[in-house]
Length: 195
Image (cartoon, rainbow, N blue to C red; front, side, top):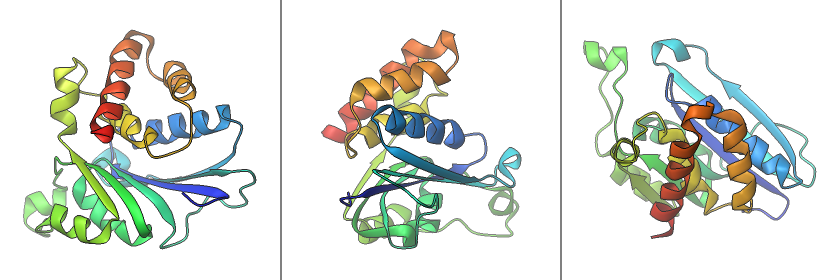
């Protein structure tokens, strides 16, 4: 990560929990005493459109927007979206992505085609790529809606935010009845990224 500011770009499609993940990430960074700025775009989110969130933190952050080529980490909920936003990644940066593709209405209708060899292309662009069968992992843990928290667990291995701050932020933002399953997903993400 850069000495002064850490830049994380989260991306996915509507309904995947990208915005909740960016809230948890921002809260965890604030709990660790950093100045945090966040920006999000979710125009067609309710219809499965692209959703992105820029989260930046450091001693003093002046803008919420990540410049092209400066993201330390791209945290992607869908591999095609990781590819779409990969030009934001800095040289040697990390891409963490769920492997499961989600086809837009345009792809499903035949108006567009889903990119080929997505993971291979991401491998070429990243200093390190960690793809994960995220849905399979969280389903095995009993909460198929916790893909976002699993991915945050993976992210936590690559950024300087203490684990207890992550857990506090998760507990404050997920529904009470899902706290335990979300914390299990977070820990599983840490295991996956650390192996």
